[in-house]
Length: 234
Image (tube, rainbow, N blue to C red; front, side, top):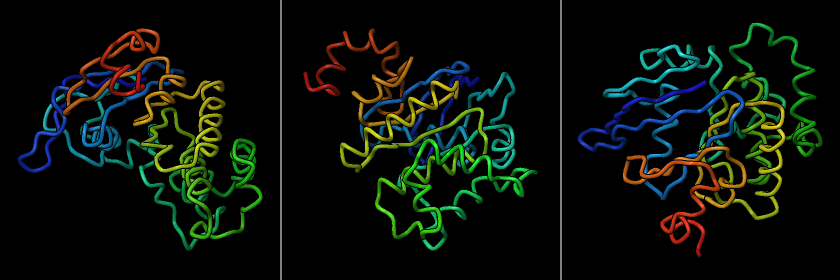
């Protein structure tokens, strides 16, 4: 579904991503873990076209996309749920969801899709007419993910979906991601919560100072002393 080969990204003179290569297979959940400022968000922004690549290739379903605009990548089936939720606070839940389907030709027929995301996030159904800015942080995160799903993506990118959330809300978000994965959704998660990522993902990549330092299955990485010490507290 997705392949990065030797991707380099700069912010001015700062070399943020250094020869990053990774793959996400169709129907797989992959996770990108690492500390703050490792380059996780930059990787996702580069994937969706919000940050230019200085070099390297990004392929989506074998098609090179690194020269395509963000709207064109969305039309191909890539949706980003950004860090910090970034919902539209003065709009209702329903209006936020409608905006997620903005590029779709059938956006006048969204009722079935509303019910699909409400089945995943029942709290949103209860608050469908409420302004997003009046919701809790956890509810806003659910709305952000639901808004991404309204684009009907083939690949869902989740940037720090559990950041700053209470443990009980993290469990709800994790359950929702598991449900999406069970339905065959291809997902790439950038996440500091390594324990959660290891429970969710089929394959993990460890990003450190802009480079992939380790990769493997959760079972493989659980054996790594570096992972155990830095990310799992053991």
